[in-house]
Structures are given as C-alpha cells and as structure tokens.
Length: 176
Image 1 (tube, helix red, strand yellow):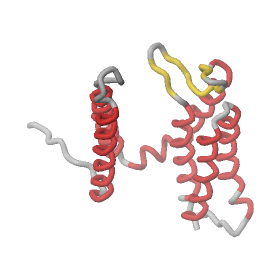
Image 2 (cartoon, rainbow, N blue to C red; image 1 turned 90 degrees about the horizontal axis):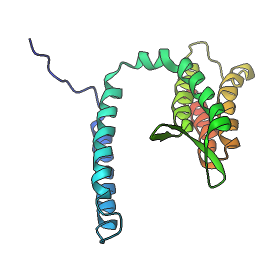
Image 3 (tube, rainbow, N blue to C red; image 1 turned 60 degrees about the vertical axis):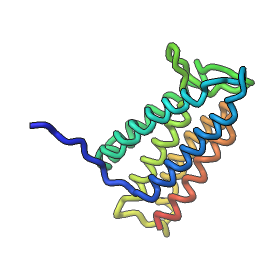
C-alpha cells in the first residue's frame, strides 16, 4: 500500500506571508543581478536554496514538538561547545571569528545556539512549578541565556549576541 505525503498542521496565513516575502526577495535579487557582469544568475542559486529551505521547513514542521523538547538540552550543550570551538579554531574575517569551516561548507554556530537557547528556555518556562514571583525562578533562564550571549559577544558579533537577551525578555513575558 502506498503512503500519502501529508501536510503537517500549518498556520496558513503566516505561511502565505512568508512565501510572499520570499517571492519578493527572489524578485529583488533577480532585478539587482540582471545587469550583465553583475552576479548574473544569482537569483537561480537563491531559488535553489529556497527549495532546500522549504524542504527543511516541511521536515521540521512534520516532527512532533515533544522531539524538540527532548533534544533541547543536548542541542544546547552541543551549541555551547561549538561556540567555544569558534573562539579556538574559528575562521577570521574582518577581525571577527564567527565561522567554523567543515570542508567546503562554512556555518555560524551562533545561529544554532539561538535555536537551542529558545528550546531550553521554552522547556524551562513550560514547567508547571514555575513561579516568576520568586527570584530563584528567574536565575536559571538568565544563566542559560548569558552563557551563549557572552560567547557570541566574544567573537565579536554584537547583533547576534543581543538577540539572546531580547529572546529572554520575551520568554519572561510569555512565561507570565
């Protein structure tokens, strides 16, 4: 018996808005690179990456959220190790070490750290025993956020590092 490919539960208005923004972005890249000699065909590469990103988003949406809940702390630990590795063996560009090279691929561990930190904070704030009227409940999320903040600020990458405290403020707000 053949299995059918089913759509995961999606927020259709948000998906429509995201696809509209993606289409505008591709159109802008196409418009900016149609001048002969000015990165011709870059829009095609952007379109290929868009397809890969949509496939990855489909996969991420298809996975049950409890899987992400169970991966929160291991992913956070790996992201912290990668942020430390950036400071030791990272690639420098314009006076900042932000990238790790693996053969032909370069990636920025701070992006993984943002996702991992959000997962851990969501898990912390989902605790039924959470009481934000007590200071001891404020400190663990603060420490969880300050560790990647400090490591990313050391690279230095001010924009990315400031996303961690902003994330924490919103999590405190949503946490009650």
